[in-house]
Length: 433
Ligand SMILES: *Cc1c(COP(=O)(O)O)cnc(C)c1O
Image 1 (cartoon, rainbow, N blue to C red):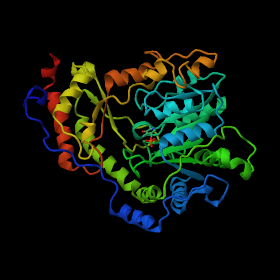
Image 2: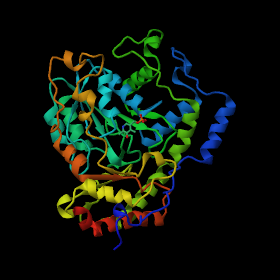
Image 3: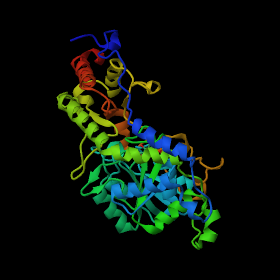
């Protein structure tokens, strides 16, 4: 038993952890070719062959669709743009309600507001942290148009339960799969379980091209609308002969050729990169599972997990100390990851703060200063503390997330993570007082 670093003892770990470097020489070769071709983008914002973009973008879309077993893939410049496109493409009307998760990256809940629709928060599951079917059902009203589900931390949402509910109430399901590429539920990939799925190619994700996003769907009409919204719809519809003008205000959400070239090569690496995460998690869990105050992440029946983050449940009653104090002691023993030093120690108390607690929801101010769209909706919406008790308990008391299982870590690195948790557990009495 050695003294905890938080009380001046020696840290378990003194050197930084290795960086996560999924992009390498293979991508450099692809980018060099694009660079030499001088085709950096080939999008035209009018009805023309180039409305669909350049050769890299089109190949990426074809390969992505084939890989995930889906009819259409549309490349955009971020998963945030992808979510915005999806909300527009399903024909969202002002003051429609869209049910969202409070425990995710903010864009999954902001997306409805882009079309002046109202985000309504349902609670998450205590064991898998995705939207809870019963809670979603409680939030359905005559104005509900869609559900944005999130495959949080790397495992698919409860698509049996949620999809059935959606069918019953005639709702669209938009699946935010930014954190779960290559996860499966039954014989389908996450991302293809709803009406529209979105992926992220941002540098924090399993595979990336710096910034980027992909939207997938089996529905040709939705794919058409997604492409229009991506690329100046309003300037395209007339010559294209579109008569349905719903949400045909376009944006520029286009991906560049170099990003697409990187993304194409990255896709081929995805299975291996996921396998390395799984291997690291298996190794960690063999030891961490022995610590009585920790519960390893639950994997949904029939699903598998790709571990965007490793999410542990912490039991305060067993530890005799609040999670925050435990995590503070764990952090003191560790060091950051190379190239992400500015993000600090990659262990968190929970994840993102429940999104309805953001000022935008608390003050209900989005567009202009007079509370639009809420104030004009004719209904009242409650975003107060207590709306989603499971999420609040996870965030404020019982969830720990970390990223020290990213590919690139060695067995010694993982041993240091285990040693850290063991050390803090064995000395937990010291932090009680
Ligand atoms: C990263 C992320 C996004 C946004 O992705 P960007 O490509 O950065 O816009 C959306 N949803 C979830 C769950 C994410 O993790």
